[in-house]
Image 1 (tube, rainbow, N blue to C red):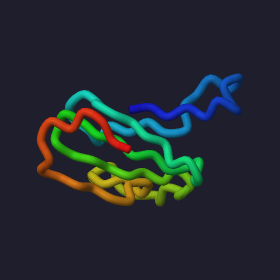
Image 2: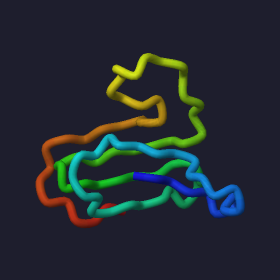
Image 3: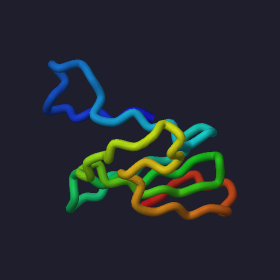
Length: 83
């Protein structure tokens, strides 16, 4: 999943490139009062909440959980839309 900040499209790079979800994304919802927070649902039966205002720490490449990941809800099947 890549996240683009439309204010910086002229730089032609995404602000985040996250390969956390292994299956297709089924729904994305941006937080209306916090522009750096997004919720993502996926066919991998996970709902995740991301905060892209969090600066990533320097870690080894073996870390599986990104710093921007604030919440994971697992085990829900067939999520098609989140609000």
